[in-house]
View 1: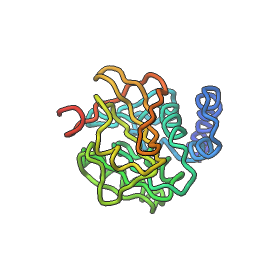
View 2: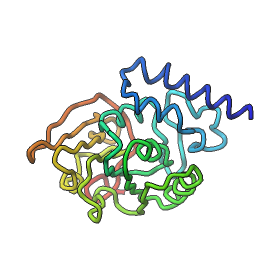
View 3: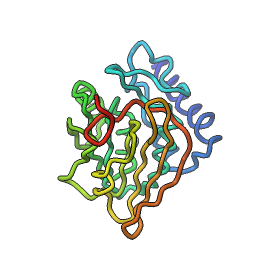
Length: 217
């Protein structure tokens, strides 16, 4: 029981101290991040750091992103609850849970199958029923369910994969880290009248987006 209370307080502090002072002001994003148990998505040995202001390793050379970056990318998608959202890089499943709490349906792709299986099990235990999973090369997107209102890429790419731009609906938003293997800029792309308008949201560092339209493994 003590743990539950501690984690609840940790979530409150995360929202008040890490997110709100840095410009996260979408009430829906703040609410969902105050509810979802990030501690369920980290390794047992790192439970004490679950709500700290930095990324954490989740195995297979992958990470769970810093809470602020999760919030920043989520806020940039401007979700209203009616979207079909595509996530490239399921990872721990934490960002997937955030998106599922704010979208009509989430389609998530992960190339590392053990991570996908673990995330799917945790998300099922938490009661999510609006997520579809696929073990696949995320740089190719998921054509079967296109177009998407929102697309989030949770790994750094040399450039925005063309298939993802092609699968974006008119008026849709895409958020992706673009740069070299050591540092990237977080880019928001909005599709307007067939054109792709870019906005730079600032510097970041992600693991590599591996695939046909990303980095080679």
